Image 1 (tube, helix red, strand yellow):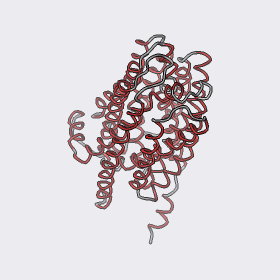
Image 2 (cartoon, one colour):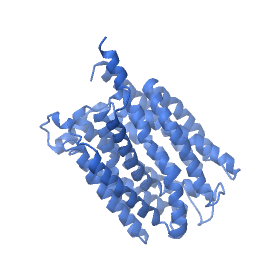
Image 3 (cartoon, one colour):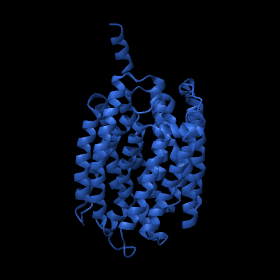
Image 4 (cartoon, helix red, strand yellow):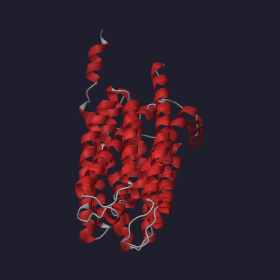
Length: 416
């Protein structure tokens, strides 16, 4: 009888929890924008630097591979420090790497800068996930993930259109310089406003950093979660780098229309994210994931086979594709966060993020080898093959996320 009021009370976020969600979301915004801006500038970069599709795929993969390696190297240490200090350390490294991107003037410098940015930026997402798992119970995480994923939508609504405008006006380096300024302000706010996150340090462990890493990898139910996340990410990485080149050279939209495509897609994701977050806290998370996956497979197969069509239809297809993709990510991430024990969360999230990045790096390279462009202005060829591969991987994701869902339910039933 005494627990009902408490339950009702804990359904609401405290002012400090709202602050943490905002800080993590805006941090996510800067990191996501830094990575995402490469895709809409893909056509511009390939034309200005005379890059082949395989070379641009490598530029995207440079960030992903370095982020993955960094995550694995830091996974053993992730649960041995205040998570706020880890966030501040890697975020300042990310800012420095992005600054180097903003002064790069050739392909080699760009690759080097992307590697540095990935080494630091790739770990930030996993640290944020660990903070969320520490501060919010599983019943609230769907909503939290929904708000955090709004950083993805905001990067498209605000970040990418502004970035494309700056890139068209002053060169492709300018968006990275803008991110440096914004991220520096966010870093200072986190430093001043966020409290230490040290609850996990009370869970004593005698394992060394290496043994902690090995222990985390050795857990079978953790490995299912890792595989699930990796397969889930491959599809997006395989298709995303070529989105602007496909839209311009195949669908025949203009450089001026490109920001509108990203803005409209972003608005739709901003609207759907909180809805999916709340839904995944009230409805079975796997059911949402299942139906969203079926919708995404349908949209991928249609979109990758499109030719020049009216601009309104292009906007509609992008909206539906974005809604289906984001509706998969929120319940999948919320479920995966329910697998690790508190003392393993930092390592689990680091490894999970690393495998996600490495899988994405492989996917971008594979995509660059499959997709062919004969010259700067010719249509992309074999883009539809990517659609078939993504659909097959999405089907496999359904099976893997189903297993994750069963394990999370078992842990909850056991009171873990």
